[in-house]
Figure (cartoon, one colour):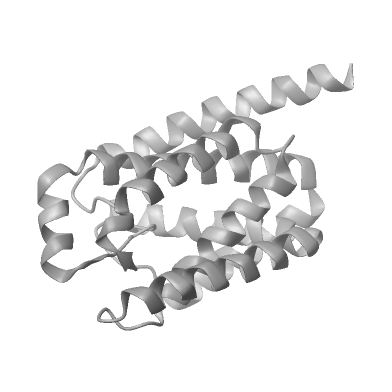
Length: 200
């Protein structure tokens, strides 16, 4: 949650970060970790502030973002596990959203644990797949926010805050999971070919 005047710059930042993660996530993994740590920290911290306090929201977002970035960058292995867990959560939410239902807490926890465990066993591949699909999802969320146009701006101006819904940005758009899978596969193939070329 941020003041509505920050909607445009934040969505373009999300689009740039998502593109970087999707197509170069493995080579720039520490930078990607820092970006995502900042994004998640900012989202969590700013949502703790009241809508009537725009300055507090921005300060909380900056502080939470810095803490999140530091935690993920310095906790590299924790970051790898969290990428796997985040991918697991994203998968379970996508599966259930296509069915028009919310996932049960136990399913979310199980998918997160499976993703974290898999990430530690197969670090290189999980980092590539996780950053490709995580970046693809971030690109879609940002693109939807950019393309949302006047209706979203009118809603934001009415409430004076902009609320980002990263897990379900367009509930009735059935093309979103397909676009996510296609973008994620393209990002994965590109990253695998780049890392294979680098090894040679």
